[in-house]
Amino acid sequence: MSLEKLIEKLKKEYINNLPQRVSEIEAHLASKDMEALKNDFHKLKGNGKTYGCPEITELATVVEKICNLPKPELTASVGPAIVLLREIHHNRLQNKEFLIHRDSRFTDLKRIAA
Image 1 (cartoon, rainbow, N blue to C red):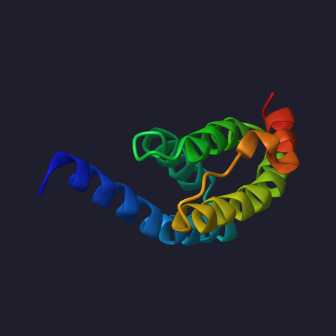
Image 2 (image 1 turned 45 degrees about the horizontal axis):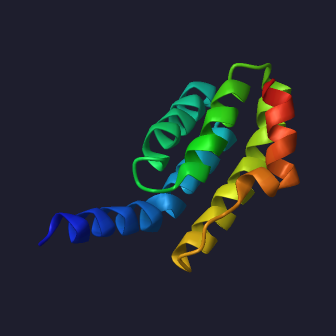
């Protein structure tokens, strides 16, 4: 297998595993495990760009900052982040980019993180 095909395969696996990661985020939110939640977004931040999904890295970077805020801001912010992750997943399955900077929900999350 060529390096190019291997990279493409890894990118595909990353996108295909995204729903599982979202489920883990939801479980950590439901159990109020804020440390695990922060760790979930930290991992997404580190891996998104590596696997060709910079919008995941950008979203996770913002939400990881929000994880350091008081609990009400955090719990109110994770829901929209989950929705955005699902939309990113849907777009990527169709080989489309998700223009996160044009999304008002992302803008709102950035405002909370600032």
